[in-house]
Image 1: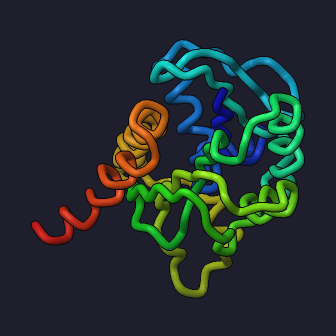
Image 2: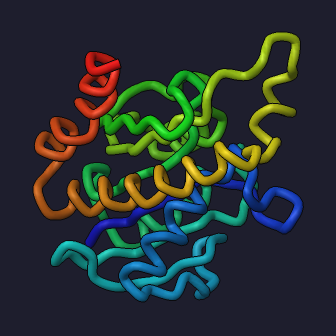
Length: 195
């Protein structure tokens, strides 16, 4: 079984913010594969189903971002999954809005949710799908930026990115990490060459 975790902050106040792109990708997967994410377990909203021929549990931790690892650890231990069977989807300020990057492992890169997951699991060897939200404007506080919402035109672009990130998760499940990385990590490079 795979656990697919989207990172975000719970509550209406944070809905649709840049920091909540992980939740929005989980919502896309939920909708696409008809997996309701409504069960309250492991300090998260969860839903179980099948994606790409694999049993999965979709998760939206309700602990607030900087304690996401507590929720992830609880579920990982309960289902006795290996770290390779955990896929975390989250926002990345170092990528252009909507750009995807799949990694098999790595550091937190300053992301508090990932930092807490690494601390709780005692490992940084778990797959992740990063969704670019763009760099913060100069002189703007990072916390204010990640808790802001996407403006009109960008919002439409990001909706497409959420759908693509959901496809990337499916590609990991169906074809494996290497194939998914080759497919989705190359897209940006191709685009840059054609501009």
